[in-house]
Amino acid sequence: MEVHAPPGTIIGSVRQEFSLIFPLFSVLDSSKKVVLQIRGPFLTSSCLCNDVVFDIYSKDGRTKLGIISKNWTGMLREAFTDVDNFTVVFPIDLDVKIKAVLLGALFLIDFIFFESGSGPNTPDVPGNIIN
Image 1 (tube, rainbow, N blue to C red):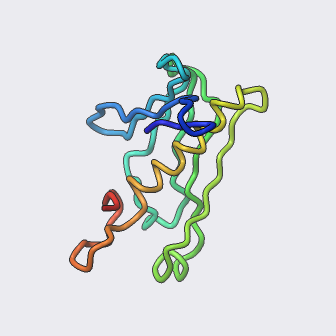
Image 2: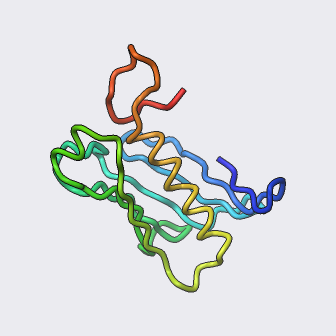
Image 3: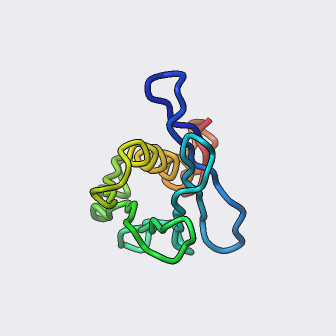
Protein backbone atom coordinates (compact mmCIF):
# COMPACT_ATOMS: atom_id res chain seq x y z
CA MET A 1 0.00 0.00 0.00
CA GLU A 2 1.38 3.40 -0.96
CA VAL A 3 0.89 6.63 0.98
CA HIS A 4 0.81 9.84 -1.08
CA ALA A 5 1.09 13.45 0.13
CA PRO A 6 0.21 15.47 -1.85
CA PRO A 7 -1.62 13.17 -4.29
CA GLY A 8 0.85 11.77 -6.79
CA THR A 9 3.88 12.12 -4.49
CA ILE A 10 4.75 8.86 -2.71
CA ILE A 11 6.04 9.46 0.82
CA GLY A 12 6.24 5.79 1.76
CA SER A 13 4.58 2.41 1.60
CA VAL A 14 3.63 -0.63 3.64
CA ARG A 15 4.40 -4.12 2.35
CA GLN A 16 2.99 -7.33 3.82
CA GLU A 17 5.78 -9.90 4.17
CA PHE A 18 5.54 -13.69 4.08
CA SER A 19 5.31 -15.20 7.54
CA LEU A 20 4.03 -18.61 8.61
CA ILE A 21 2.95 -17.68 12.13
CA PHE A 22 2.76 -13.94 12.79
CA PRO A 23 1.51 -11.08 10.60
CA LEU A 24 4.56 -9.16 9.37
CA PHE A 25 4.75 -5.83 7.54
CA SER A 26 7.62 -3.65 6.36
CA VAL A 27 7.35 0.14 6.39
CA LEU A 28 9.29 1.69 3.51
CA ASP A 29 10.30 5.28 2.87
CA SER A 30 9.89 7.08 -0.47
CA SER A 31 13.08 5.47 -1.82
CA LYS A 32 11.70 1.97 -1.05
CA LYS A 33 14.13 1.37 1.84
CA VAL A 34 12.80 -0.51 4.86
CA VAL A 35 12.72 1.84 7.85
CA LEU A 36 10.47 -0.07 10.29
CA GLN A 37 8.87 -3.47 10.80
CA ILE A 38 5.43 -4.21 12.21
CA ARG A 39 4.79 -7.60 13.83
CA GLY A 40 1.34 -8.77 14.82
CA PRO A 41 0.19 -11.37 17.33
CA PHE A 42 -0.44 -15.04 16.61
CA LEU A 43 -4.20 -14.50 17.11
CA THR A 44 -5.58 -11.31 15.62
CA SER A 45 -9.15 -11.83 16.80
CA SER A 46 -10.58 -9.48 19.39
CA CYS A 47 -12.77 -12.37 20.60
CA LEU A 48 -10.19 -12.85 23.36
CA CYS A 49 -11.53 -9.78 25.22
CA ASN A 50 -8.18 -7.99 24.99
CA ASP A 51 -6.47 -5.38 22.89
CA VAL A 52 -4.85 -6.75 19.73
CA VAL A 53 -1.34 -5.27 19.60
CA PHE A 54 0.93 -4.99 16.56
CA ASP A 55 4.46 -4.04 17.66
CA ILE A 56 6.52 -1.51 15.68
CA TYR A 57 10.24 -2.36 15.51
CA SER A 58 13.37 -0.79 14.08
CA LYS A 59 14.36 -1.94 10.58
CA ASP A 60 16.63 -4.66 12.02
CA GLY A 61 13.73 -5.95 14.15
CA ARG A 62 15.63 -5.66 17.45
CA THR A 63 14.32 -2.48 19.06
CA LYS A 64 10.64 -2.01 19.86
CA LEU A 65 9.69 1.58 19.01
CA GLY A 66 5.91 1.65 19.36
CA ILE A 67 2.59 -0.10 18.78
CA ILE A 68 -0.54 -0.15 16.67
CA SER A 69 -3.32 -1.49 18.88
CA LYS A 70 -6.97 -2.34 18.24
CA ASN A 71 -8.53 -1.52 21.58
CA TRP A 72 -11.06 -3.85 23.19
CA THR A 73 -14.26 -1.83 23.65
CA GLY A 74 -16.45 -4.31 25.47
CA MET A 75 -18.53 -7.34 24.57
CA LEU A 76 -21.67 -5.49 23.40
CA ARG A 77 -19.89 -2.95 21.22
CA GLU A 78 -17.63 -5.62 19.70
CA ALA A 79 -20.56 -7.95 19.00
CA PHE A 80 -23.19 -5.53 17.73
CA THR A 81 -21.34 -2.65 16.05
CA ASP A 82 -18.61 -2.17 13.48
CA VAL A 83 -16.96 0.58 15.52
CA ASP A 84 -13.25 0.10 16.18
CA ASN A 85 -10.91 2.14 18.36
CA PHE A 86 -7.19 2.13 17.64
CA THR A 87 -4.10 3.50 19.34
CA VAL A 88 -0.85 4.32 17.55
CA VAL A 89 2.28 5.00 19.59
CA PHE A 90 5.56 6.00 17.94
CA PRO A 91 8.66 8.04 18.85
CA ILE A 92 8.06 11.79 18.87
CA ASP A 93 11.20 12.38 16.78
CA LEU A 94 10.17 9.98 14.01
CA ASP A 95 10.08 11.57 10.53
CA VAL A 96 6.62 13.06 9.97
CA LYS A 97 6.34 11.24 6.63
CA ILE A 98 6.92 7.88 8.32
CA LYS A 99 4.31 8.82 10.95
CA ALA A 100 1.85 9.31 8.08
CA VAL A 101 2.83 5.94 6.63
CA LEU A 102 2.19 4.33 10.05
CA LEU A 103 -1.33 5.81 10.01
CA GLY A 104 -1.75 4.20 6.59
CA ALA A 105 -0.49 0.93 8.09
CA LEU A 106 -3.20 1.21 10.75
CA PHE A 107 -5.90 1.39 8.06
CA LEU A 108 -4.33 -1.53 6.17
CA ILE A 109 -4.23 -3.66 9.33
CA ASP A 110 -7.85 -2.72 10.09
CA PHE A 111 -9.03 -3.77 6.62
CA ILE A 112 -7.03 -7.01 6.57
CA PHE A 113 -7.79 -8.27 10.07
CA PHE A 114 -10.86 -6.54 11.50
CA GLU A 115 -13.31 -5.60 8.76
CA SER A 116 -15.90 -8.03 7.45
CA GLY A 117 -16.70 -8.65 3.80
CA SER A 118 -19.26 -6.47 2.10
CA GLY A 119 -21.55 -9.08 0.56
CA PRO A 120 -24.56 -10.75 2.21
CA ASN A 121 -22.96 -14.20 1.90
CA THR A 122 -19.58 -13.17 3.27
CA PRO A 123 -18.92 -14.49 6.77
CA ASP A 124 -18.11 -11.86 9.39
CA VAL A 125 -14.72 -13.14 10.52
CA PRO A 126 -11.38 -11.42 11.12
CA GLY A 127 -9.12 -11.46 8.08
CA ASN A 128 -11.75 -10.92 5.40
CA ILE A 129 -10.66 -8.30 2.91
CA ILE A 130 -13.26 -5.73 1.87
CA ASN A 131 -14.37 -6.11 -1.73
